[in-house]
Image: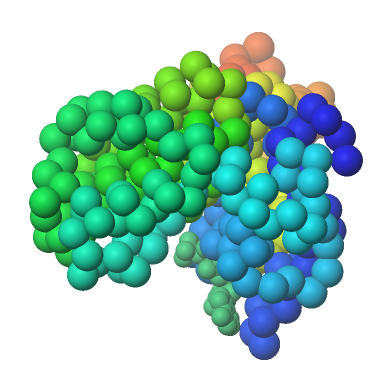
Length: 291
Ligand SMILES: Nc1ncnc2c1ncn2[C@@H]1O[C@H](COP(=O)(O)OP(=O)(O)OP(=O)(O)O)[C@@H](O)[C@H]1O
């Protein structure tokens, strides 16, 4: 247990018949935003459901604000604001009844925050949840989760399937609320662009295993995109594993190796440039290495 972390996942393991979430370790610092990214079926929702105790897990520990989440479920739930795809649970109900039902669970519920978000999103609470569009459902869920001064937001694909305008609005609200209140966010997404925009740290999961978990600035400074800025021979290209579409992403420890290799293929090393790649390119490179 470390007081500077709001969430610690230690050695989490969950076995399904055809999939294993294997030895997941994550540390989320208080006041920071972590993007949890990975392809379809990587294990993101399984991890999130384990954090929330929605499913049981085989081994490992989940510590929320210093407390083992299994030891005190009520107090840990109180400090979590969750957005997932559970609107189907309430779809037959009027939005107003859902709000009245949910607010009873939280002693820090704040109607002023809730009403201002509802006005901002222009949502009509006299509608049934099923009458809301996908974007409105996401806004409604977000308003519910942001209205009880949570310390930790767990967001499962909060922007998936939304148009760019609503996506940007939701990201802004998450970012601003969290920074104002000093809260923390663990959010899963397929959209690397969103993560690059607001996350302080990134955890990348593939096939039930974590391939990378680090501060975004470290990841971006640890990897380089190599631009040769000249024609290169097929033989040299073949030597460069993971060279695709004229892009080569390498860990910075490999810079010298690449320069020396290039020289041995008569490449003019003065023209070679090393730039900072997009997060997307770095993660794609990691998947290619794993497969
Ligand atoms: N209840 C279950 N029983 C058996 N297998 C399951 C169950 N729930 C999930 N899985 C399997 O676990 C794997 C991980 O699923 P999970 O939903 O965690 O992935 P994900 O990263 O959230 O994917 P997506 O981005 O598509 O939502 C998948 O292979 C899925 O089929």
